[in-house]
Amino acid sequence: MGDYTLTALGPATELLDLPFDRPLAEWDEPRLVAVPRGISRHVVRFVRARDRVFAIKEATDRFVLREHDLLRELANRSVPVVGAFGAVTGRRARDGTELGGLLITRHLPFSVPYRALFTGMGVPDLRARLLDALAELFARIHLAGFYWGDCSLSNTLFRRDAGALAAYLVDAETGELHPRLSDGQRGYDLDIATENIAGELFDLRAAGDFPADVDPLGTATALRPRYERLWDELTSDQTVAVDESYRIDARIKRLNRLGFDLAELSINSVDGGRRLRFATQIVEPGHHRRRILRLTGLTVGENQARGMLADLARFRAKWAEGIGQEIDEDAAARRWLDEKYYPTLAMVPPALRGKLPDAELFHEINEHRWFLSEAQGRDVGRSVAVEAYARDVLAALPEASAGVVAAPEHDASADDAVDDRDAGDAGDDRDAGDAGDAGDDGAQDG
Ligand SMILES: Nc1ncnc2c1ncn2[C@@H]1O[C@H](COP(=O)(O)OP(=O)(O)O)[C@@H](O)[C@H]1O
Ligand SMILES: [Mg+2]
Image 1: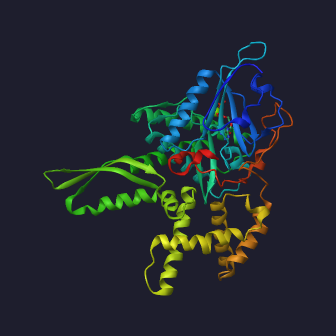
Image 2: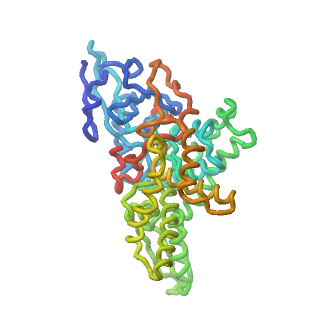
Image 3: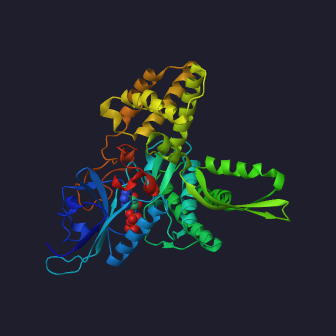
């Protein structure tokens, strides 16, 4: 073995016997797996060690350390990013030749690169979902003071979130953290994104994977107005008449509906006290998922949480109606978990259960029940819905473990050994969480 220094954010003993004394492209390792992935400048390969999958990227030591620090700092600032795990630097081959450094990140469970979205996932209204996810990712990145500098679809990963998509930043190499961004910096970041995304969508079109009736350029340029609308809603000041302070409450409710909490606001009186000026100083993403976490202890996606809260509210109202008195939300949540959430999941055949994260499975089953009931004009009931969903939908999804559809890398040079079509969105997310909210869910110990 040549020399190296491994710094890791957790026990990394399972990685110690990797061939660190050889260039990453030359590794010939049974633990290498082929995972659907985006296009990259660097050599990036995936390793399954025990039950976890890691992405390993080779670059200069300086780049590796910088990106590792940035990813950590972004996670601390609630930005959805892949989880940094470690860095290997000072590598030397046995003959003393210097080798590049290695950045090790946790594979983001259930994530798919954008090509897989277009080729296999069947996300309804994909164009709008994609733009919403990107607009939100950008807003969250910019709120954190991060200038990305190289946003592209290849540098983003997507996860399904109860009918919506959640976007994650995967490549932070070109980014810079600032106390806050100027409008010029934000605008320039969007310029780069628009240009890159347009190029990528044209490439998809050329490969026959982009819908013929959707305009690639129009799709890319539609990102900015969506982002600006969200940014304004999150950050702009508002002045209201003193007797209209309810409009401030309405604004806060709108923020909550968008999935943000107001962590700090300021209200100044202006016009000799006739009007109030209201500014959102700090907004924090994760409004619904924080509530679900508090009520149930479950870590789920924002949109999954939204659906679960609605289901819980219906459950609570029905129960209250039955006994003729109000029920406390915590008590309702405990009973909802025991009588609704877990029993529904338990009805899914165990062999199929790991194909989707629990919360996504619960959402899908509820949707399926609604869909069947609509078609039949009556409620088909839970067990019929679960059975039909498992048989007709879930069984057709690809097998996966640890949240990744991966195959052994037969050919060490074949980065595309797995067809993106196989990515689907299968796997197991139970301990995966969301790196972006590392603060409240221990997301990093996937
Ligand atoms: N932690 C990860 N989880 C899942 N996929 C990843 C992860 N890290 C990298 N990838 C995949 O590898 C591709 C290349 O990684 P990236 O960091 O963008 O490399 P480069 O700096 O060379 O562009 C990404 O597009 C993504 O699909
Ligand atoms: Mg990249």
